Image (tube, rainbow, N blue to C red; front, top):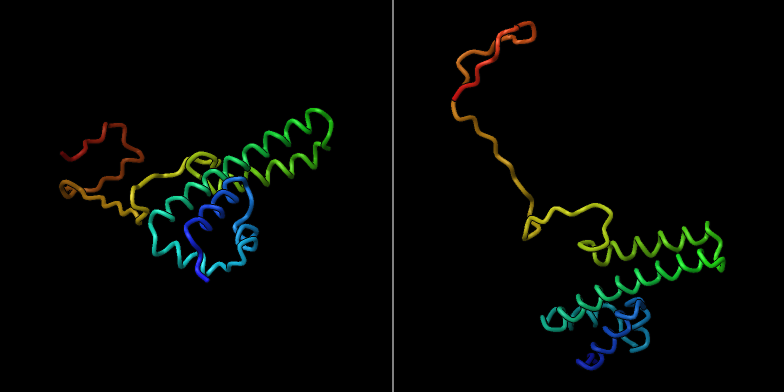
Length: 141
């Protein structure tokens, strides 16, 4: 039986709260292929899914904060806290890299490969060995 829009919204709510897609789908008795086939045919649902994944990243960030406070208050061993915090940071960076990635991403628009072409304005007349020269080098115009 295909999923209804209400089913999809329920799944998106689960994901927004930080649960995995697998656990949300198992509650509905649905497999990945059925879920993704329904998304392909409905751009509005795909937009909701993308938003839910972003909310999941926010949930991971909240978990980082909670683990930090647990270490601070002595409820969690600092070594264990580091593992937990690093794991949630990794998850948040994968779900919403524009906000939580460690390094800034190069935004080239459509995610296509970038090609750089370098051209000389004119051919150099003569190549000189300037390693021992004290004269200023002239550049071609």
